[in-house]
Amino acid sequence: MLMVTQRVSIPDDEIELTAIRAQGAGGQHVNKSSTAIHLRFDIASSSLPDSYKQRLLVFKHHLITAEGIVIIKSQEHRSQELNRETALARLVALIKEATVVVKARRATKPTKASKQRRLDSKSRKGSTKALRGKVVV
Figure 1 (cartoon, rainbow, N blue to C red):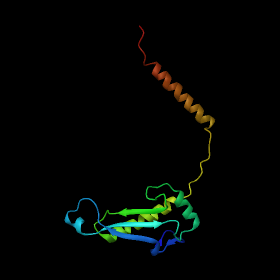
Figure 2: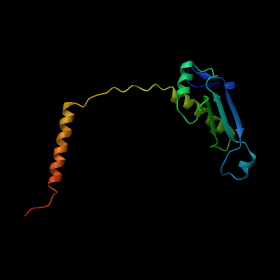
Figure 3: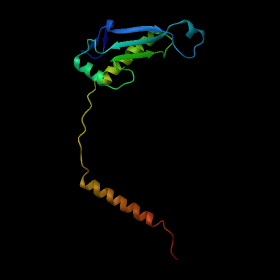
Figure 4: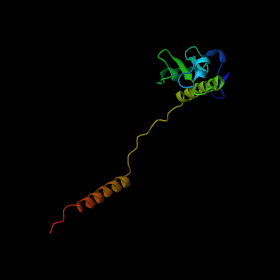
């Protein structure tokens, strides 16, 4: 059972974890051991609440395919267990990131005093630059 929040969790049978060979440097160890983890999670057929599913399916992220499947490859560590934990943590982080409600921005106007300060500083800068001109003798 993977806990996303206190109320939301994902059963282990909905997450498909596969051990694969890692890429990159590592010598002979890389060629003979499957330490990388390939995680697949189908959003539509999961037991997540409908609000979470909808947000995840419309969320634009490189880890979510057009079919609504989350694919995470973890190969940062030399141990399979650490890579499994990393992949699951990344899945939880993705779900939390997609379900954060962004506060709507309220349009505001600058105050009269701030407009006056801006105009004063503009005229001050302008007069300073005017003094930098050629000296007339």
